[in-house]
Image (cartoon, rainbow, N blue to C red; front, side, top):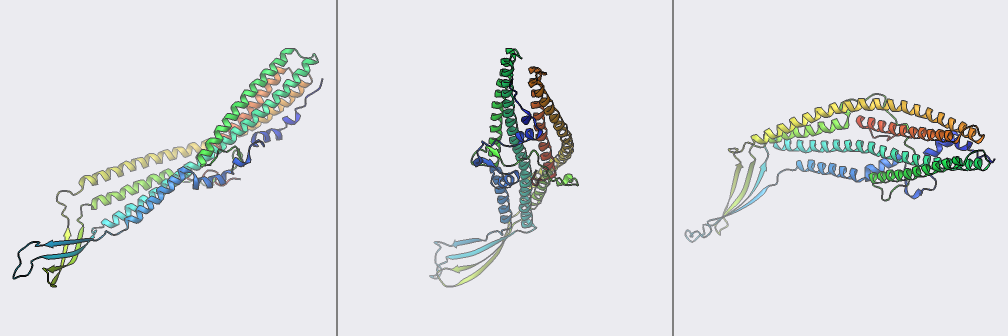
Length: 418
């Protein structure tokens, strides 16, 4: 009987490389860049981030506009049109004046403060969006890598099933196995083929989602680096809840609404206008000067309801801030616990994979020597596939946990990794 040697495929070094390396047949033209490069590109070019940047620029323009002074007003008054002449001199009078309104009582300062705080709130929301986007992008990148790893695993599993089928046929032909074993090996190959097709579809979908998130012009077909094995730089000291981007954004929004209350309280203060001009009499060259002061009288509208509405908005913003603080605290505790748990799961999964690889190697040797039945070999191979899938899942769960921790800490996930 001709033996089929699978010892090379059973080596742990080969097993690890087959899972994590992208198939060489994939086109490099659509290869996603390393995650750190992709993150920087996406923060500048992804549609979601472009929209956030535009909102910040708009808020900055509003803040600059709030510092502008009120425009003067030009008035022209023509009087005594058609009036009878006096001693042959027309009684017509033309008055030309310029009125400059002034905001008194701190109205302009309050308006400027609202613009500046709205700008700060927009910046805080942008940072919050960037941190959330980085975490989502990291998970999408790691998911694509995990799906490619599953695809490589399914392809390798199919190759093993085919070699087992060849070995089974050789044993059947030599009379050492019943023909039933060949049918069982064929069924195993068919199942491996279906698994590979599903894995290819999952990988394609994951890469397409990563492409859409990053704003790529064409779908990616490969990844340039690994994120599942990356070790991100985690600060030694835990960040306070007040440094969470969600808390900072909520505080900035509450501060902006608080400044709006000051604007509403000063809205009833009259706008004073000082005017100066010249008046010409009749059709002569005689003229005189005019000066005046105008002011509105807050008799019917003192903006009491506007003030009450602004105060209630601040109360609602404060309640949202309190809720966000509680959620941020719970999210960080959960993230820290999840990181520790996934580290333990990864260690256990890696150990299980090594044990399953050794068991398959021994089972393959035993089957080739006629000491191990085919059904036991198939079961051992399924256990190896499951163990390696568990390792992939554990690495992906670790990335999810680290991304969640970075998000609650206000860091860009995996911005610097080694």
